[in-house]
Image (cartoon, rainbow, N blue to C red; front, side, top):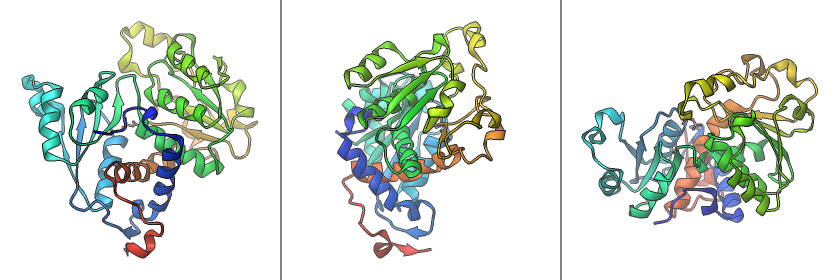
Length: 316
Ligand code: CP
């Protein structure tokens, strides 16, 4: 069954078409218009790792489109604690639902689920692997700010080794001809196989540990949290914790339309002083998870988003 496991599952034309659908659905996501495109459909939320935004925005997206949601809930209160395998869990849940959003600590788990499921699987994050639905909302946010995805200077900063959002996003950006700069401590550099893949797509990849030196030329700065939970050793985490702490005063030389993004949650890598600057875009970015996931579910379920949603929807 088709699903969305990595960004390789979408062509550039499909990405643009889904982003266009997401744009049309903005009044529905905001609760201004009721448009039950997914009435009668059920989303299964299977989150084997903590989540606020991905789980809740999937749920909001399905409900705003008139569908319903069932949740595995806290793994500790599910039959996973009795030893049920992922394979068996998927066999059950795809009988209960029409589409599944899944997050799992093991890299590759979403592909494994997709291979045995009868309904589409949306990968909501698999370990340090991929997070393609996040990439779709990231691309939506970038296009909203800059009017294009092409040829932008994008700096991805922080934990590039374990951060799955930047693995998926860098791949998509390069496919749209963006210039990517990776800013990280040496021990958290982008994995070699990802850098090699980007170069194979024709990208010139710049790697540095100097984040502040990149600010003046950037159209987008994408900050990430250091993924404490993925470090095998607390001492290794302690060496890089707090490596980057962006403050409002660091942005004096930035382009006027430069945006700062973050998949969230943040810890200390963006100081609250940045929140009130013209550059901060991370809370809008989190909201955009609703439209992006609405459009993705419509696409995977074969439901066409009308050209003019205002003609089909009910004003609330
Ligand atoms: N961006 C993101 O994946 O956030 P959550 O971990 O809260 O889902």
